[in-house]
Length: 383
Image 1 (cartoon, rainbow, N blue to C red):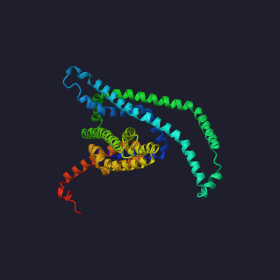
Image 2: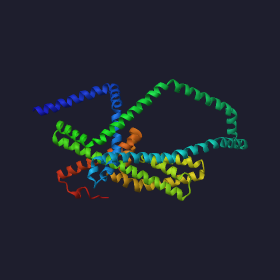
Image 3: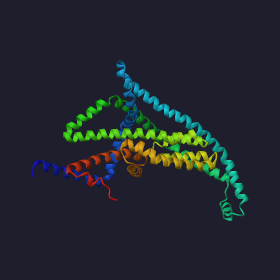
Image 4: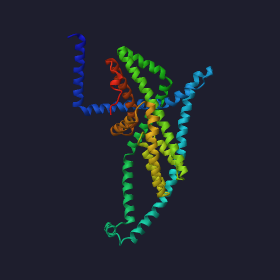
């Protein structure tokens, strides 16, 4: 047995022992991982912010000061400022549309609740003879508005007492969250302004530690992952804008209320793949039903029609096409990611599955070429 084989056997045995110990003390391993995550959370957050900001920033930087050589040193700073202005401008515009309408709707709803409750009481009184079971339930339950209000007040008071008692812990968590966010923002600035230097340093470490062929593979996978995640983010934003515009136009044509507000809400929630638009639909129906319940039903019909168009025509081509993942596997990625990690899993699993799909496709093609299998063996489908 040569030295290389012995080394591989020792590595396998060491890994097996470490894995066994980790499984036997899973709670300790999990607490350690949670501690490490909380320790590095600001930097993970900063890296995520830098990645998101970098997508529009590099496009602006690419077309900025092309003919002005004197301003080349300033183009990254200017592109970063323009990106921040664009992001905050879009968020401010969305909040300007959403918040006043939500406040107005809340006031309308607050004014309609007493009227609706009075009408419901009158209806029960008028139909008590036809509905003996409901009448008996009301009499036995001794429904009393004053009693209900008193109980609700007691619940609110006890909740307020609990909130005050845990106030210091709440303030501490809020302050910690703000500090982590600020550290993440500062870290994202360093990453964005030194991304080429950081990439060179990462490659140096890879080539110093790993064999050259393996380091080449890691760099190739890194480039592919960056491209796929960037395309996914761009495609998802474009798809959300298209979907929101479709709702604004369609609701304006059919003279439905809150067309602009619901369009903006659906555009924002559609940033969550597949399921986000349904969240916007629920909010939209709630807003419209306060004005006209019949139109709320028609809005649901309109939503289902537009959702079919978006799901079958727009999303697979805009998002699935941009990341090179067929629509069937997009659905699989959404289902698996959502089941495992919720909304974050949905956002991560689509580009992650695209990377795995591309790597596995290249592996299969390489194996077929190596085995010299003719194309007519697998490209012809026999029904």
